[in-house]
Length: 169
Image (cartoon, rainbow, N blue to C red):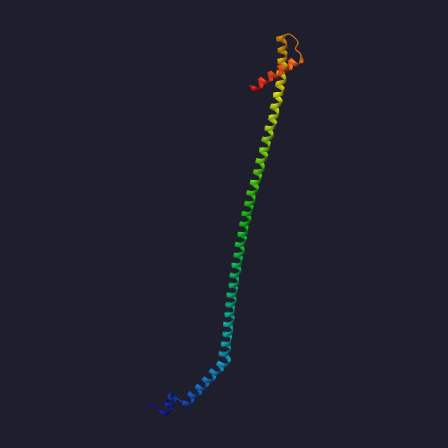
């Protein structure tokens, strides 16, 4: 059945297996030193770069949030200050309004007092004028009634009594 030659072809050659294994180990070691370590080092560097990028991004985000908070605080402070300014302006305007109204009221009262005083003077002038006209009319009437000349003393007495009667009415 099997000849020795056919056995040699099918047979297992330990030397050949050992040589193949040795070649495999050598190729593995060469690949490990020449390929695996540099690729691993490159991957580690790449991972460090990515980690650094993430760290910088987190730092930038934290800084942006801090700036945002500071901006919001400043904005709120500006709003508060604007409200304070508006409140102060309203208070000042109300005080000015009261001051103007008080001044206008005083001016109105002064004008009314002056008008009353002027009216009183006009009334006194009118009374004096009326009294003078009444005196003249009464003198003329008295002269006609009596048809005689009255002396100065009688004339003054008649006028005074007539004025007293008019004053009482």
